[in-house]
Image (tube, rainbow, N blue to C red; front, side):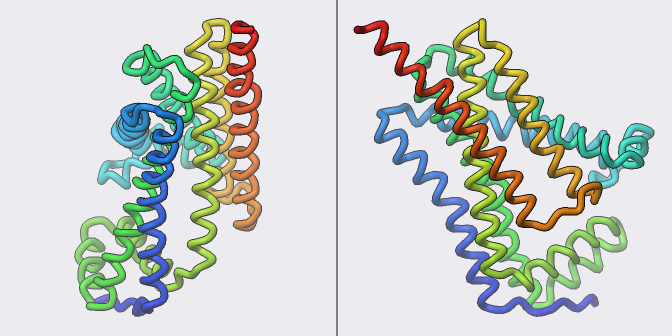
Length: 286
């Protein structure tokens, strides 16, 4: 049986803290915002469901089949081999998929179930739901899973599971070995970086939600929709380039890039679109 380094109490505490923060904080933010602005909480839920449908149910399986079919137990295809042999193109596709699917999801939500909600606060309510659910789904659930793995590692069950998977899916087993190593060395710095990254990601999602909202609200501004796709694609494209090693940057540099995208997207959308919406209303009533 494969042996793994025992997970210390400190690591489990940090993982538990991360799970609580990543699950509870987005919900608290949504409640505070909707109460303060007298917004419908259903708008937040629409954002969450839209992310689940477009990013998880639709985007991820299609992306996996085209780019990494072996991760789904399928054989490599000509397309996947072509993309994986070209790291820059692979990184671009990794960025393009979330760009198209998530921004189109926002567009569809605004054009359908949220069609009659034209107040500017709708854009932020949706963004909190979309970005908040991403935090819960990607990070909150992951931390809960890691805690379960930590318990299995300490009781010896994790090694047995990895040995069983190794016989059927070696790549998946290798991924679990990497995860186990990360869990054993998980520190407060890792937790802090995850929190900072999610804050900037949340800012980006709220900013992108504002951008697409105004693309739907004013036909003359529909160009904002492809702009949102471009911004989202560019951000994830850079992450993809770093992932495949085309760009070799330290972690702090990557976080800095994500911070720039998050802050600029949010501030641009908030001050150039959201805040000016109030100015227009004030001019009309004066």
